[in-house]
Length: 159
Ligand code: HEC
Image (cartoon, rainbow, N blue to C red):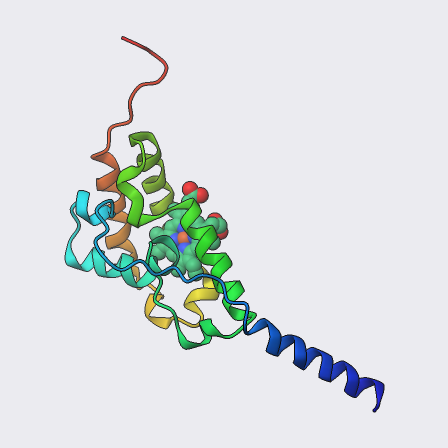
């Protein structure tokens, strides 16, 4: 067998083998009592925007496309979900202390204003998550007003 054929066969074998090593899926059915919208009001429109554009990486429930079962794509998606959730999890938002919650909402409108979020590699495939200027404004205004409703305790002075 030609050397190149051996290499191709080895690559194929590895691709087959890694299909059996699947990361755990981010799927948690059932009530999410700490979810942000359970504690902070938002219009149906804002909720729909956050759900379609942010929840796949920033909640306890990712809506997986079929190719999420194909390795090594599954690892790549899993990395984004793990990393995204670690930074900000809207399903666990009510567990954040006021200072953190306030800061995460500030980050939220900043990231959207700067077009950093949702990630481009995501909107490239998920066209429904490409936010229109109007949707961005709704999301930004909501994050700003919700942030204003979360007072940050003074840490410098103890009275
Ligand atoms: C495809 C996955 C993905 C989607 C969709 C996504 N994010 Fe992210 N997000 C990440 C990852 C990964 C990070 C951490 C690394 C980074 O900052 O790039 C992050 C970081 C953030 C941070 C920074 C948190 C901090 O304090 O460091 C904010 C805020 C944020 N995202 C908000 C959003 C919002 C709002 C949306 C929807 C409009 C969104 N993200 C959609 C993956 C995603």
